[in-house]
Length: 121
Image 1: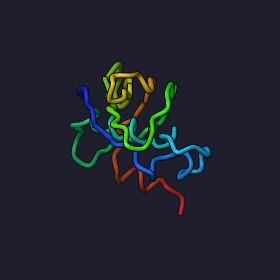
Image 2 (image 1 turned 45 degrees about the vertical axis):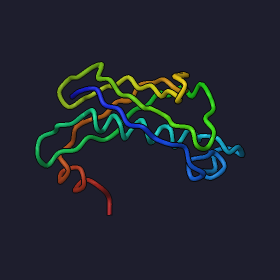
Image 3 (image 1 turned 120 degrees about the vertical axis):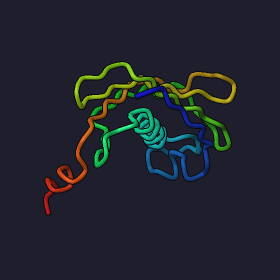
Image 4 (image 1 turned 180 degrees about the vertical axis):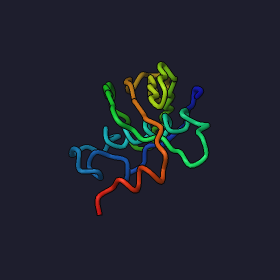
């Protein structure tokens, strides 16, 4: 595990209006959450062969709106590890350094084959 970050740019497809989570053309919280999970997935690496990590718990406070075109930097920092459990502090900042969101994401390392075999169907 290590710190990880990714830069994203808000597009029309990332807005609350596009995702059905509101009526405004600003970054939707569900998209921001997906970005945070993606970066924590990066931070959970490297993992044993045949394993992946899955998100199990999220706390996210979306503090400020971001217009279409804004660049958003999402960072994940490991804060806790216990066996298969991985917990990360996440932040999102705008191009001007303004804090857009803060939170915590918990992931669990799973064996891919065993995980998929347990799915109904």
